Amino acid sequence: MAQRAGVDDGTSGVVVTNVDPASAAASAGLRKGDVIQEVNHSKVANASEFASALQKGKNGDSLLLVNRQGNKMYLAV
Image (cartoon, rainbow, N blue to C red):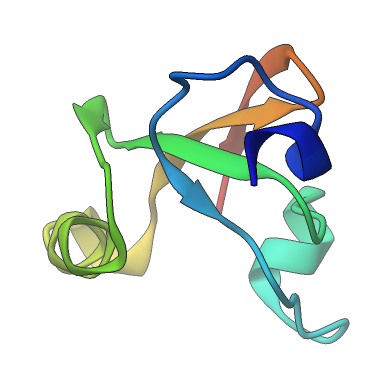
């Protein structure tokens, strides 16, 4: 899966499999194949941790650390 996402083996996070084009995530620049490694500065390794970290966001806003083919960036969603 790491090879398909274009990231190094051993990279942990949640692979984005679908992004609704009308969503805030799409507007922020999130793309299919991105690997979300942190939500609000908390590391996430699976979908459960991702969902839990999102719920802790203030006013529904979250800061995501995204790994896109080896390049890391922050996206505000």
